[in-house]
Amino acid sequence: MAPFQKQAPAVADAANGLVLRFAGQSWIDVTDASGARVERGLVDAGAERRYAPGQVAHITLGNAEAVEVLHGGKPVDLAPYRAANVARFTVSSSGEPAPARH
Image 1: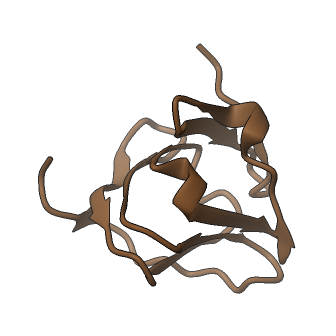
Image 2 (image 1 turned 90 degrees about the vertical axis):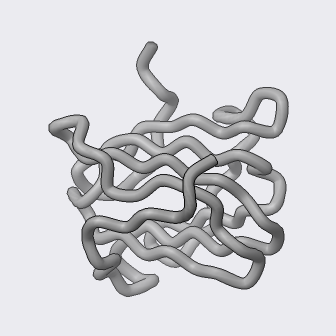
């Protein structure tokens, strides 16, 4: 996998946006509504990513069990989005996770 790449700064506070906290190393693939890649690569344990509402449209997380996702400061249950420890979900314009569209 390629090294971590980041195109846009994460600009959200925990109360309004989507926050990802990594307890273990994980890979991430994040795209915006146009399909442009926001970031992709490995993320180390202890890292955190923040996205403002409307900043991202789709997230895929590898080693999903090691990632805590918060929306509006509240934990998101990744179980409905996870298969084989990979979570895939879309993100609404308000920043709320929803099942990925196939």
